[in-house]
Structure formats: structure tokens, C-alpha cells
Image (cartoon, rainbow, N blue to C red; front, side, top):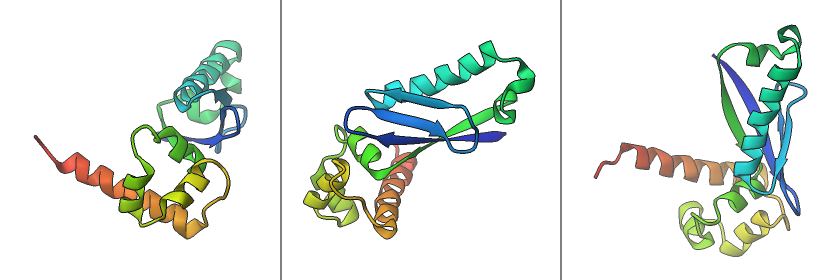
Length: 132
């Protein structure tokens, strides 16, 4: 199964997305959910309006979508779920610095971005193994 990689980024007034490994797939929305929906609509329009011979190879068969966020977009999107205090406990990164990342005041270095990603993946792995 092929993997379509979609990058999601935040700007001052909306979110935008583009396919990293396929040309011609772009989207935007006021929220990440709207942007994801617009990506699916862009794929649908390609399939509806172009002959199959002109479709990108990835979308001709079965494929999955990997949603790839920049740090600002990720922190904005999950701000209603994770407080900066919770993220500070998970990552060890100061709340004020997390706020700066979420609001585009500063961008984290690669090692800090990986630290945030590792903390969230660790939480996800823990949650997937629990039962009630």
C-alpha cells in the first residue's frame, strides 16, 4: 500500500496543506479538520476531472495518508486537549516556550521538535495498551 504524505502548516489566519510526495494536491481550511477534509476533496476532484492516466500513481490504487504537522500547527490543533502545563510535564519544555511555538513567535530546533514528538508518541503507546 502506498503512503500519501500530507504536510499541514499553520499561518496567521488558516491552515494549509500540500502533498509532499505528489504534485497537485493542495488544501486549506480554518481548522485542521477542515484542511483534512479539503485534502480529500482535492483528491476526489482529481479523480473526477482528470483521466485516470493523469492521476498521480499513489492515488490510483490503495493508499494511506500520513498527516505531517509543523510544530505550530500540532500545538494549535491539540491546544483544546493538551494544556501547556500538561505538555510541560510530558516534555520538560517550559510552558512559555511552548506558547511561543504554538503562536509562531519562535520555532523549535530539531532536537526540541523530536522531544515533543517522542513525548506524544510515548503517551499514545501508553494509552493504546491500557484497558478499563
